Image (cartoon, rainbow, N blue to C red; front, side, top):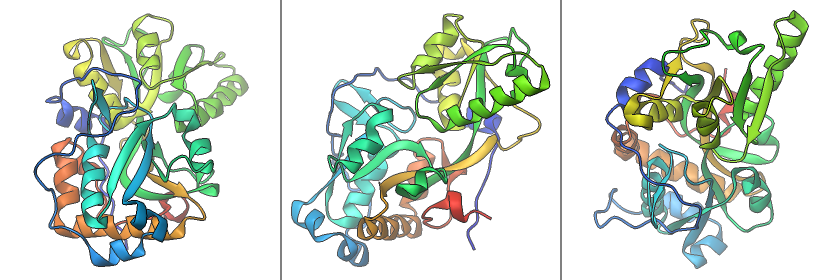
Length: 308
């Protein structure tokens, strides 16, 4: 039986107040391998489960939408964040290197299907729809939250308060479906039209909100907390806690994506993550990025369809 720890957006914000922002870029860049090893070394069962092609190549190619703090940040050619650290630790358990490269977020699944990459490591939310194409090895479990300007000038307190207003969202994100459902609810209830601006990168909704083009945007709670804590030295934005969703709006798993048919790689990653959990390294990595309360106690595959 899996045990999941859920925390509120406010708790996430409090945990992330110590984080600092990094500059962003759009070029592919290999993560600098830290000098210090994070784990006790190769896990034989996990390494043996790898597809022969990856064992021979010695590399797992990962697609990521960079930057997407706190999952991944780019400062020049240096990557940092949860995913680069987790990639290093998983690589040590599997006996291979991870190479994380930039892709526009909406193209990561097509690129994986085209065999340009082996996995997606981009803070991607696991959904039942996505599980039709991908398997997910789950990294964390957290909800969405709403980001507004500091002072909350429009008085947004619940999701339905967005009715009648323009909002922003990243293209192809799980939050887009949430807003589309809300738009139908707004219309049917006569609460005013919800105008949705779909924007290319994770940072674009933040820019639109700061410029006053929208009144809010929904985003994963860890990302929201990082943004609120760092943008304008913590003075530009705030998060809304919806009393209907004390653990965040629609809590979901976020994980590493593999092609559905690539069962060997899925199992190898699951075994490697389980080894990290048992060794305590997984928790240490999450704690380092102030995401420890989003941890799972066992390696889970396809949590969206198996939850409950």
